[in-house]
Length: 437
Ligand code: SF4
Image (cartoon, rainbow, N blue to C red; front, side):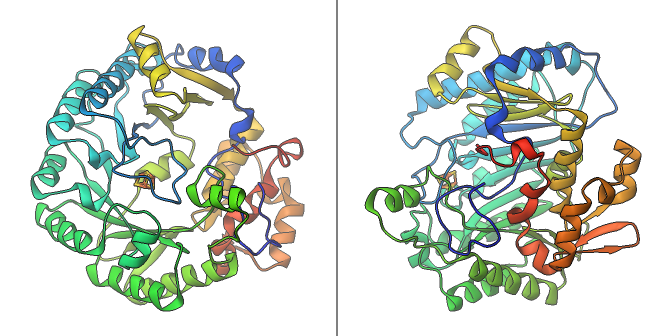
């Protein structure tokens, strides 16, 4: 972690806590432990999910830190889709997979909607030969508005997508262009209308507070325009600057000042958005999400992951968590294809979690929902989390970032807005100072 609550400007470095222990602790020498976890008897009662990484985009956004390619041709994309199918086939042969049903699937990227309708059918038919998601409760598909048309949306509905997530990010065309997005606002509106006609059970919009060029007035206008569309849920991230973004490289190489608003400003913008959505019947579902109260609206993917569920990540660089072991695939496109060509799982590094690490992981991830149930942790881990982490909780209590209510530890609004800044305080002492990624 390079950011602390006392640092207010948005400088280069990671602050978003998405997993525990830090990725830097996952090692190639522990890969046999992942293989061992896959050779255990199947736990058929536990939820199982699938993440599919589609690493292709029309162009690279200036704030992007994901593993993406903007130069792959149709032939290379098809080789990649074959590799994804092969990877799932490898998993389906393991002992731990026998008899297990998928509860959710998530197509992320990159831009999953970049691939063609024909490729989508090809991919899904291939995957379904090995593990079916026909009984899955949720299939999420991330989209970039400029890659969609009505027939592709109909294809997504046919392959079982239940939750369409539109990467809107902002409604202001100058801001979209300044940040290198491939789409502009007219595409957002036309795609949103078509998606409503196709009738997906849930449509989510992604927004980012603090893009290059953001102003108070433009942010308020973006929140107003998002509300006008009446989405089922909205995910709002505060812009951060991991090392490998174009913006970060400009700061480092050209010595320019960070063009991103400071953390208190971004927190104020998120606070404003929360208030506006709440006033129109939305509830705050997590530190990053508001959801309509007009109908049931869940996000099974994060719910399962944040409660320790198993998820297999397919694709280059993808992350998995299975049977208490973290593992990640190789970073290189060529190495990924080559491993699967040889019928081998393309694993790069792994880490088996200790019981204490499992507890910390679930606790910090569930704190992102805004409250944790102390009884849940007593039942699952035999631990009173307040007593176990008392100095940290007392400090957060003194700073009015949390409060205790009827067996829960709840984040105040202020705590929710800056949750990623203090989660590392719960890390084990020896992992507080290590590199996160
Ligand atoms: S569309 Fe998403 S994944 Fe692709 S470059 Fe932009 S931020 Fe990265």
